[in-house]
Image (cartoon, rainbow, N blue to C red):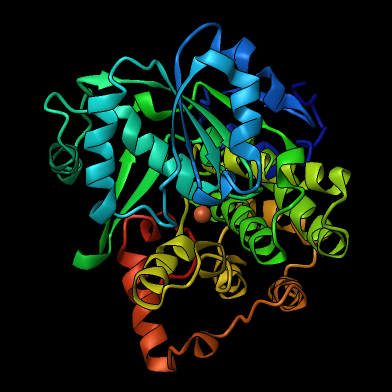
Length: 383
Ligand SMILES: [Fe+2]
């Protein structure tokens, strides 16, 4: 309403100012099935198509492969379960070439597992003309978009609550021998469907529960202190971060509680929806060197710096402060300490020194990370 003579302009909230300042886009094409027992809907989703299951080696011993064979029947044409944490070119090459030789006629890849299983499936689903993995790496090394010669559809079934890979098009392919990583992301690598079934998460060990939950928390916060943030990703991120902080301590005390597992699965899904449109920022940029050099699991490597990164984000932009305030009950001054206490409570150290990195080395690492592709997304203090 236009103010009349003598009337004052109404006060605008930071969100209203943000909405007025620029236009925004949000896009996520993944269909989502969420809830206990949804894994049984796979035959309906496949609709007669032939599928290869890509999963983690322990899935067989856990009875998961047998259960999926029963659910899928003849639609399941093969099982690939030799995946490893942090998929690396050293073993992906042989797996990729055999996959395209043996399963060229399969229509769909069903990825069942954590981020490594889903990322491996994304690498496998993109077929080169020659069927050679080197050709895929060469295409990725150009850093330019390309259209794959062949592609299979992907159905992602996460068994951890954290990665968000089920609602993003990205996969990280490591080359530990060369000390680097490749980022795969194409319009074709969005999953067609994410099946998020908390019953598959009931037996996760405490260590993996913590690592994946903190990965989700990092995704949520990193989408906020991000130059690509937008009001839609913010909404998902606030809900996700609040829910992870509220749920994780209770879940660690009661790991077989399906309701708590469902809450954490939903929080991780929302965090995935948030960063699917913003990508990550400084904490993830730092994590890559910590994982490559020290073998720190991703969920710890990308979260132990969150209090420090939060300290660099607060007070820089009123719009970002308003969103962060919604997570930390409007107490931004005390927020880094509160986040630090939360991480300590779930057994995660927040000092570089706890990981064998001294003060000078950690400063160099942060500066390096700020210059990295993801570090450039960070909107906070850069000195
Ligand atoms: Fe992550």
